[in-house]
Structures are given as C-alpha cells and as structure tokens.
Image (cartoon, rainbow, N blue to C red; front, top):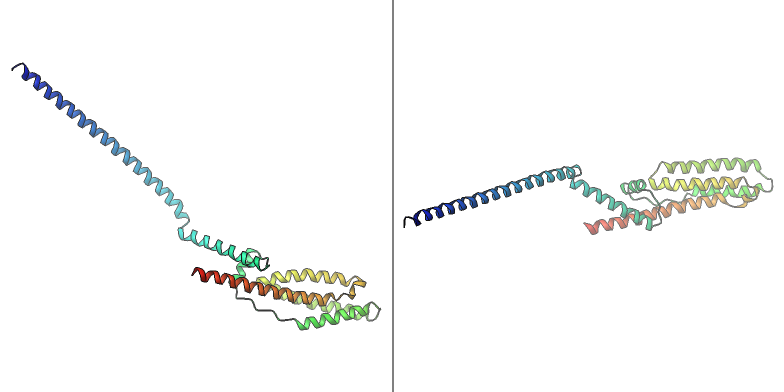
Length: 220
C-alpha cells in the first residue's frame, strides 16, 4: 500500500503537468491565432482605406454623370448621322443646348439678283454691256458674301452650312473668269443649293432632336 501511494501521487502530478501543458499550448495557439486575425484585419482596413481614397477622388455620382453624358453624346451623334448630318462634338453640344431650328425662308431677293446677273453674263458673250456685267458681278458677289457672313454669326448648324456655301461661292467666282462658262447660271444654281442645304439641315436636326426626346421619354 505504501509503495503504490507514491506511484499514484506521481501519476497525478504527471497528469496535472500534461494538462497544464495542453492548456498552455491551447492558450498559446489561441493567442497566436488571435494575433494573426488581428493583423489580417488591420491589413484589410488599411487596404480598404487606400481603395476608398482612390474612389473618393472620383465620386460615384460624378462617374455616373460622366457615363450618362458620354451615352447621350453617342446617341446624339448616331441620331445626326442617321439624318446625313456631319457635325463635330462641339457643334452637336451647341445644337442640343439651343432651341429647335426654324425652317429657313427662300431668299427671293438673292434669287432675283442671281437671275439678272446670269442673264447679263450671257449678254456679255456678245460684247454688249461688258462694263455693266463686271460691275454687277462685283455687287452681287459682295451681297452674297455678306449673306454668308451673317450666317457665320448664327447657330452652329448655320455656321457649318456657311462654310459649304463659301466654298461653292469660290467655285462660282472661278466660273465668272471663264468666258464660255458664263452661259451657265451659276449664281442662280448657287442660291438654290444654299437654300436647299439649309432646309435639309434644319429638317434633319429637327428629326434627330425628335428621336432624342423620344429616348428621354422612354427612360423617364
């Protein structure tokens, strides 16, 4: 009995030591795991703060507005292209901000001047009234130039049409210096083309704006 008593006490102490070691190991493992989780949590917070800083540089609302503007710009360009209108982004922006264009009226005064000028040019081939036709060419050319110049001060679409008119007017002036080409009623043709170009542009813009308004109503 006395021999087994110390043995049992030794076993109890050994069991207590093993238990304490297990508890210590578990405590150490839990501590290490807690520290690891804490370290990962701090890293995630730091990463989120960095990402949040980059995102805050461009607010979500700002990005949404930019995407919406880009989409509207593409839709406007597509609508104008479908109507055969070739305008740059700045011109399209001005057209969208302005009111719907009015349909141009036929320039009867310019048309009558052009007809008279072309008739006198045909008489110039016979040597009659050479001085008169020359002076009239200068006067009519000046009036047409002022008419074009007034359109350069108008809306964006009118400025675009004025550029085309100016190029065609230069062609007409070149024809005036070729004697046998004077029989061509170039001034009359120029006035008709200028009017039809403006009318076609105004109609196309109205149709394109109508399409864009329909898209807005569908979204709304």
